[in-house]
Structures are given as structure tokens and as C-alpha cells.
Image (cartoon, rainbow, N blue to C red; front, side):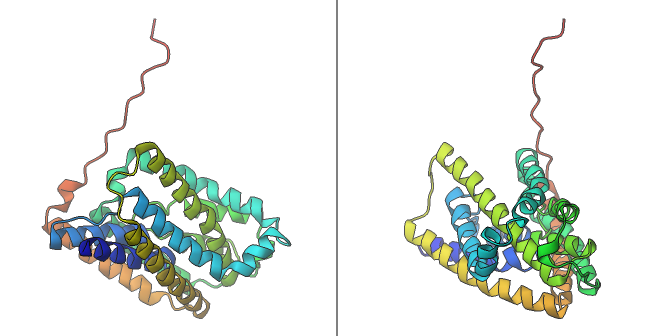
Length: 286
């Protein structure tokens, strides 16, 4: 039981920090699992559907509390933003489903995460030096929303940050830093909720085998919520002050270290292409 609590606390901390700080939650979870497995011979329960749903619930609650006033305005005065959020969500939803179906193994690879983390670091360096635009959150256009959504389409890749790609996309199309952050985390609500609903559907379909005890899940939700809350507030401060460079250099250095570790320990052999299922023709050829 102690190991169950230890694993869920590790996952909750990693999820809470990396869901909001633009350093890739999926990438760090993949590396954390590989490190924990190498040290203990056991894997973190990240593929357990119940654990995934609970951790998402904790970080989603953090967004709802930090942005509670914006959400109220979204449902009352700023309702024109709602279709923009739907439009911005479509590209990431499409790529996420395709990657989960055809490249599920690669999406949990520490080596793949290590290769992409330095690219994420370069993106953060660009964000920290990019002058902000003058478009406020309330005036974001459909074209800008779609452009941000296309950037978010890269977020399902392990090592690429969702918040980083959306903030970078916002700055690239001329919105203010505050508007880029606000729209990014408004987009996170359907993204995180949608991922949780997909996992819930799988949980209902496949059953609750190997589900951790309820007390373990509660601990995971609490840890991911509090750590996520602090991380979100920290990111907003760093973004306002333009101080993302330390996070960028962390991604670059950590990613390179993971590459060296994985290649020296045979990690390349674990990244094998997932066979693409063949589809039989609906009508047999004549």
C-alpha cells in the first residue's frame, strides 16, 4: 500500500507541475515512469484509466478556480469566445485521436520525449524574446483562434507542451501575453475535460481492473490540484515578466540527458513502430 501512495504522489506532483508549466506533462510522465521502473523494477500506474482521470480532474479543478472570474464572464458577457474555443480545440482533438490509435507505444516512450523536449525548450526561448501583440483576449478573431488551435495540435506529442504551443501561437498571431495565457488555459478546459471523458469511456468499456484504492485516488487528486494551482500561478507570473528562459534551458538539458541515458541503456530498441491495422475493402474486387 505504501508503494501505491508513493506512486500516486509522484504522478500527482509531476502532473501538477508539468500540466501548466510549459515543459510537457506527457514527456515528464514518460521519463518519470522510466526512472521509477529502472530504480524499483515497477512501473508508475500512468496507464491506469482511473489514475489518469483523477489526475486530470485535479488539474482541471485548478484551472476552474484560478480562472473562475473569466469563466463566469465567458458564460455571460464573453460568449462570443465559446465558438472560438471550439474551433481552437478541433485540430488537437483530431491529432490526439490519431496518435493514440496508431502510435500509442511511442507516445509513452522516454526516448521520444527526450528528443522532443529540447525542441520545446527552443520554443520557450522564442516565447521569452517575442514582443507581444496588441490584441486583447476579448478581441481574438476566428483566424487567430484557428492558428492557435493548429499550434496546439502538436501538443499530444510527448515532450511538447500544450500551454507552450498555444501561448507561442497566440504571440505569433499578435495577441498580448495576458490574452495568450488566458486563451491557452480556456482551451485547456475542453482539452483536459475531453481527454478525461475519453478515458472514462474506456474505463466503462474495459472495466475497472487493477483500480487503486479510493483513498489512493483521493490523494492523487489532492496532490495534482494543489501542485497544479501553484504551478499555474507561477507560470502566469513568469510569462508577465518574460522569464521563461530557465524553463527552456531545463527542457534542453533534461532532454539531452534523457537521450544519452536511453541510448546507453538500450532505449532505442523499445521504440518500435506500432503496426497500423489494415482495413479490408468494403467491396471485394471483381
